[in-house]
Length: 318
Image 1 (tube, rainbow, N blue to C red):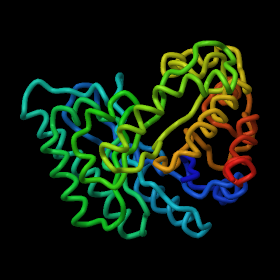
Image 2: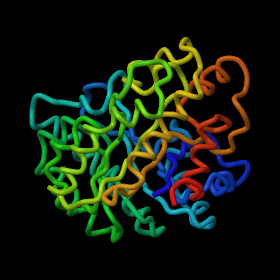
Image 3: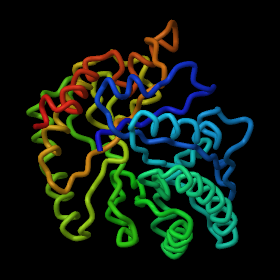
């Protein structure tokens, strides 16, 4: 899967965004219709008028339709955003609240599973980084998988956070292991490709063992690096500071190049989805927006975009 994580736009497309995706050589996109959970409240809000167009059902449907018209395959990847926290930390101290949240979440997932089935989406993701829920509520997740399978005939995965894939107990019911891949690698501002490849070795060994244990191919349902100093370490700790840290396109490019050099040759690796790609990108803009995008995960207009083309178009991957 030579994939890109497609950013949901706030308004309908002004131009066909799939043209640029074809130009970079990607053959998959991940489409993310967000849901929202207020911090510590047992509810999931989704498909509301307050959300961006691309996050709602209508925008999701149009995005998938355009992808299909342009011979691009789709991973439909719902993701709950929790205000003031991270969805992996979602937790309740009583069964009643868990069941309230799970009822809403089931409605959310089945809504998009029906869309996935109606549009012949190739892969549907039943959840993204719901770390504590997956650990504590295995019975619920197995029931959800059965419910999805009744209405959707494509392949299924779950997108685990990089540090939680081994605690997921229901890989046996899915088609491949999905990992949002943000493993900390090297602390230095601009690590070399060789330093990064060396840092990957222990993780590659563990992933290979996990594949042998489960028999399921592994796909990086997300991977990516900001274009700033130190982006190949704990990048989630840098996100709030990204506009204050020096821009470093080479660090981003080296990190992506090293990942491809390490994993492309592994027969158990099914590819992945680079986080992230803006539709109708017209440069970085001005002011705060320019500073943000210059430091952000997108490879667009940066050295990293040429790295993607080299691998996605087969110049290096053969």
